[in-house]
Amino acid sequence: MKTNLLFDFKVDEENNTIEIKREFDTDLPLVWKAWTTSELLDQWWAPKPYHVETKSLELIEGGTWLYAMVSPEGEKTWCKADYKKIEMNEELSWLDAFCDQNGNSNTTKPRSLWNNKFSAKDGRTLVNMTLHHDKLEDIQTMIEMGFKEGFTMALENLDQLLER
Image (tube, rainbow, N blue to C red; front, side, top):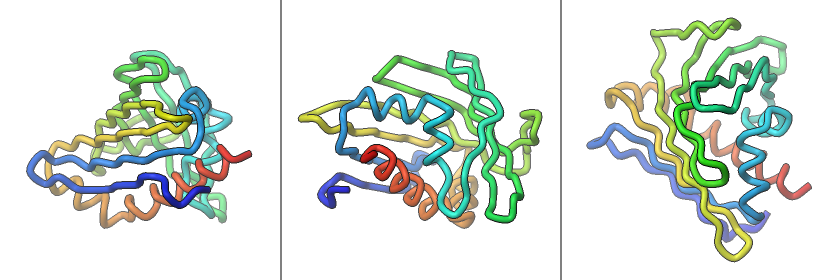
């Protein structure tokens, strides 16, 4: 992995958002495929030593990605992404939630509305991610749960996958 790739993570308390900018040293169609294909998502979305197992992925507006983050001991934490907007190679938006294995949302944990915008320049791909939350407390809960560290590790997994 090249060390001069852009990575910026900031919390905007005024607007209840987390903003992440991450650059990848490869062409946009490959990055898009890694974000939208279950076989590839399973290889990078979870921070090590966890891994992801997709139960189902329907990549259409109104569709859902239902998956489990699996611990080294085999314990599963279920999550889902309800797709809101999909513009191939440009924009991918979903509402995420912790849930049970059938996709029933856990209403005690925060949800994030992810808006991801993809752009290409000089053989690299930039993904601008904005995670919108209902209230600041939801962001604080996510940070306390280790979101920044865990997602940073997942993005590093994606770097390694893209190199192969």
